[in-house]
Length: 61
Image (cartoon, rainbow, N blue to C red; front, side, top):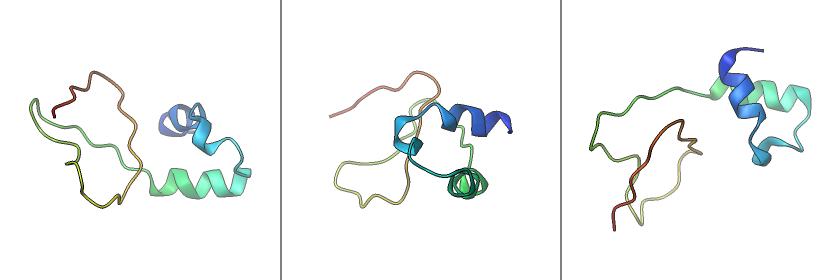
C-alpha cells in the first residue's frame, strides 16, 4: 500500500469497502497542497469530492 492509501485506510468512511473497492478509491485520490488563506470549498457549493485535512484548517463563517 502506498503512503496515501495508509492514511485513507484510517478513515471510517472507507471501513466497509472490499480490498478491490478501496484500491479504486486510492487510484482516484489526489493530494492537494493549499496556500495559506486558500479555501478548500465554499458554503453552499455542490459537493464534488471528499476531503481529508492532514494539518490545520481554519473555519471561516
